Length: 511
Image (cartoon, rainbow, N blue to C red; front, side, top):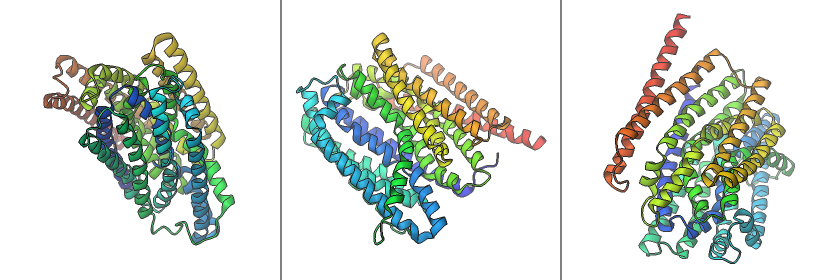
């Protein structure tokens, strides 16, 4: 399999570095949120209120819209010239804004019903429900901001500009962290005012993201404005975007469904969301690279498209597999070190860590979903992708409800992993049957190497953690202990992978 081109590697590295920085800041943001709100009624209410804005961020602000917008722009430019792309981009922007503004307006009017749907376990008229309604009405203002950012970010990525768009989540996290500092400085920890401030900060973060995306796309020849709008083309883009957005949001949609099932148990909604944020780091790296780098490569086509897709699958697994095992084995110290302070107690940490371990099981499959869905959509397999995604959500709801009723909250969350695994398997079989993945003996050897390296890493981390008692998590020693375990795992995984790569190169030269 030929290696990716140098520009593709550079773009992937830049996007991954920016996304990594965003997730690191996201950890700081979540730790601050946990400290000021803890796990309980206030945090439950805020998490329920932010569920739709968080979903919008997954769907619109992290590159998923590119799978529909970029191919449409490329086709329009190829058939009618570069000037024809501007009317399409203009109409897409205004149509998306109109839909999201309408949704925000209706959502604000019917927010009590939405909260009952998103968190049926909240007592109507109770403190959790009332606070969730108030914060939800504020946070819905984020939706049109995310939509506009998605269009401008797609234009920038279409022209090969990936750095500024990938920094937008970093800027958003900085805005939210500033709000957390304000809350602590004003002495609002553990109050309803803190939840309101976090909802307002979400909207401010959306404004900052949009400003950065506009700047990134300022030189695009398809920049919206000053042209007749191509409404028919925009409707086609919107229709084509539905399955891409569905798969981009599957992880968050599953969390929303699971939270709805578990909402009667106080603290479960916030603990589940805190755990999911930790899984978002490796998952976000895969998703951002798929949206900003893989989609443009696949749209360019050529005889190497199948190999590009297969290479993306290998890359996704090479990140997601060791990350999943690491989160599974180190769930307790990770949660304790990051979250256990202020209003977040040791008992809260135990519950969140148990949920994190269950969510980690879904990570490889969810990473594959991102890559496989992007590949399928660029090959026109829209309806098949929709059927798989919707079926996966229905299955997730049934599994979480059934398992939680029979075995409790933690086992119930395992339904997320089961539904994601079946979804990714269906996508893999679909693409392999259509010939859109270049599967051969070398790919199978690479997969075997990934599994070997991941298992050796897991054995190392497990052995060290079992023989080296963890110090108090809030201490510097606790932080260094966790860092040493993670570092040891990374060294083993990296060393084994490097040895396998060198061995593969030697065997290739000898054949």
